[in-house]
Length: 237
Image 1 (cartoon, one colour):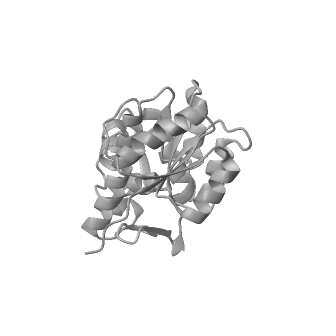
Image 2: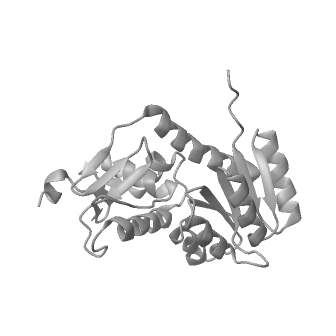
């Protein structure tokens, strides 16, 4: 029987103590760990080693973590968890708009990072194991088994988190989701103040799948509640 390979995690962080601390804890948790202390080296390692998850510091000496995130998203849908010491919420959310899946603020517990990684992997592995049916609404098609989204026959590049949120909504068209329920069902961990995070992911999704994001036809706002996916008859025209 072929042994399943360990999940590969790349840490891109310039603070040596944090890197060594995370390395130790991740290896104890049975992850294979790679490390880089600057953005350019991190991108080189990501390209050559194809990690499953990248832990990315927002503040790097040579290349801003946001630029690293943007570059990664141009060619990969790898899970990205940002580390940030910035206290302004707007600063943290910029990374999500560029395609990061999650963020952890400093100071943090390494157990929290491991929990976030496992939640992301559980979601991906669960989707693949279940081999769920393809979902469609008008010209929009989502195929969870192949991890493909297309609009009018054209492939739409989604981050893993965007894919999970869209799949969750599409599976129950017409049903309103609170932000809390959406983050829990789509991302697999308990809600803990991620309201604005959901809004950013929804905004990114609308930019990608809506003809006019200001007047969405697929992901609709339920005022005072959250969001719902349009029912088939709403897109029958």
